[in-house]
View 1 (cartoon, one colour):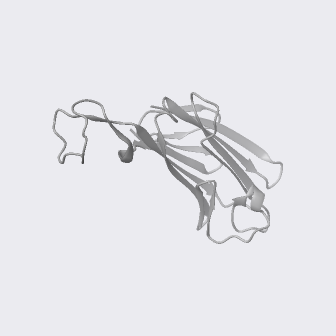
View 2 (cartoon, one colour):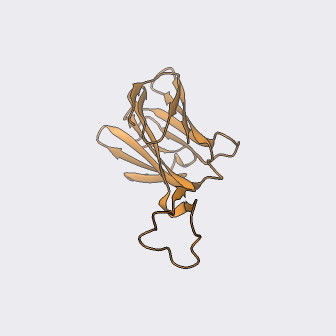
View 3 (cartoon, helix red, strand yellow):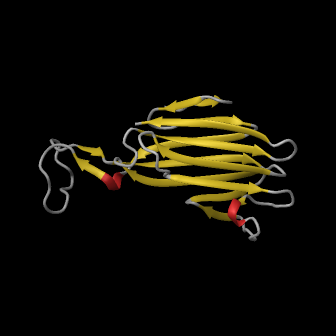
Length: 179
């Protein structure tokens, strides 16, 4: 299932597979998940005591016991901007991922809000988020596997984008992915 939508302040629900949305001012978000093959549960049939049989008998089924989340955010290369994001489970208050990046006038790259004085190369990592500048855009990538206990019924991404060129235009969206 693939969505391509223009959003401004909308709760976006995507059921398995993929969702891509233009959020505001050239910001695009792709937020997806896949079952985590490293965390498969034996849901039926015999419980193996040794190595997993290959191929798995037809009467034995496996279900995902975890999910890998993928997030790609593409931002225009503005003179000055800020982007913040958090991912939290729908049932729970703990934060699974959080980042805050800024680009000030005269900078070439987005930097962690805590590391603004540090010289940055073309690639950087902030809170498991890979940051890269490609041409006239900045691309943020995040990928991490979680157990079902951590993300049982879904996750919510809150994304805030601040255009700091003039009057600090602030845009914010929530993306909800249910499992």
